[in-house]
Length: 187
Image (cartoon, one colour):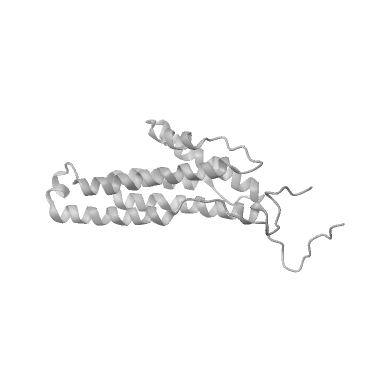
């Protein structure tokens, strides 16, 4: 078995350069900003807690920008997977985002795309590392929680994305040799 350029552990190869995954700290920051906006809205408009109603613009914008950024992260993860040499990723980045907007199908979709990512990660690492069902449950739970509490739901939405990102980082990392073993001599 020979190593391709993408699988080569040499320092100048593509394997040492991790693909650009999304900056998730931005999502967590947007979640915190949304929580602060919620607290400010409840402080300035206490009737919102009792009667509900239309949220103030600053709360809506913080929540909206947060969910848009989460969808950007979903898109970026699929862009990275589409560009992996030797891997045919079955989900296009546009499809990965777009199917979140189809009512009822989106309940299935939040389980489908993590399963495809898990297939890549587990195939690449040669062992069961990423488990897609808990990821789907976490995404679905966070999306449902966003209805009740947009800020906290947004923060929770980035936890499964962090797990996916870490699994992908492990899959893209160059293979390590056990200590004490030497690489085969090249002739």
